[in-house]
Length: 325
Figure 1 (tube, rainbow, N blue to C red):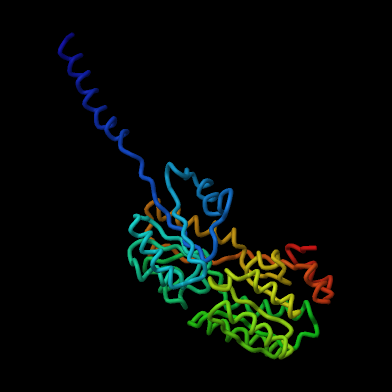
Figure 2 (figure 1 turned 90 degrees about the horizontal axis):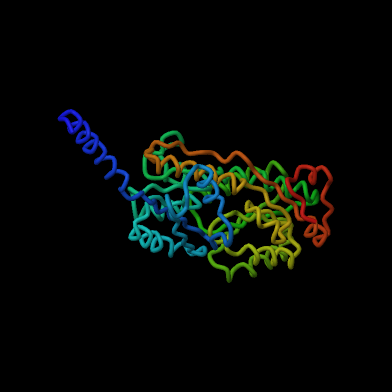
């Protein structure tokens, strides 16, 4: 072997060596925390995991998910967040702005992505929509503005509606915005309105009994972690006391509520997943603009309407994305 051949061969080995070492480096597996108010999805892929797959991420190879449910008990959420932080999660995915506030008490550095915040600026977790500025961004539904539309739909479903109520859990800036929007809408629609706040599930039967006694005809049930875990109870009480009800959560009508109108949950989660994708690829959470939910679903349960003695106008049925018969 001549000298030039030897040097060329040696150089090739030396150049290949770093590449071989690099190839042997273990792949980074990201840990993503999914915090739920209710139970996590059972069976199949969640909208989050399905969107991650579409974006090129392989579960188990590129990322793993840590599911935790606080079952509507906000006092547990901070402890669960701390547990997940100790487990070394890279991103938190939560459902609302208040959830983000609770997780922020545990960490101000790990990114937090919201899937359905009422108004992230009003909630205090984002400085503004275009540049949130902290460790929280995500998708917002502008929940306060929904309540006016929901009251209008109740009126369209029952033209004799003259007294309605808004049922909430807890207080806070978002709740006050919801109440204000409801009062403005009720005045425009010529509907008498009362606002009821509940603290625990034991109050629900008493509240719905009072609605019946006071001749309240319709109830807007405001989505939050607590009420979301008691949907079937709310549906049963509404049927028992013959109350027309509407809720933002799509499954409410499927469970037997009269109507649901709100953001498209799957679409919102997919938008939030796109944000997680950006974060994992190196984007700064503080600079990722808050996204707005742009698609909504309107569902009418015709079977429930008949049980309540209501005849839903054909014009309203035509506007529904789904009619359950």
